[in-house]
Length: 122
Image 1 (tube, helix red, strand yellow):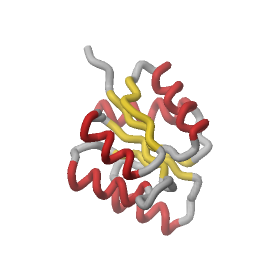
Image 2 (cartoon, helix red, strand yellow):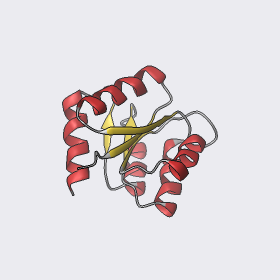
Image 3 (cartoon, one colour):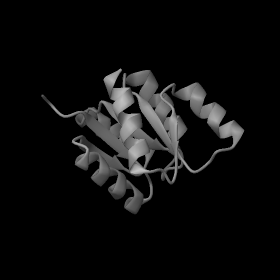
Image 4 (spheres, one colour):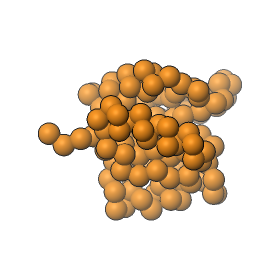
């Protein structure tokens, strides 16, 4: 049985590596790590993913929400947002873009595990 492929889009390298390590330990394949929306779009052309974990704030011209909109128009890949922002406007905008939800940083490995498993099993 092939492993589920997950892309990690996070502009803080240490956080990205921590998430990647956790996902690998859970048996998932991390297909790529990117720190910008532009790199994410480019990577998806060569490395398809079953799920994308997307930080709201990224390097480059595209933020996470803009990148998720582009992905939604071009690919059928669920996006879970990663955010440190819990204000009502940000949460509302994330809900409008992706129905798959979000994780508020810092989050526990168990929260990541249950969120990813729930989405990939549906």
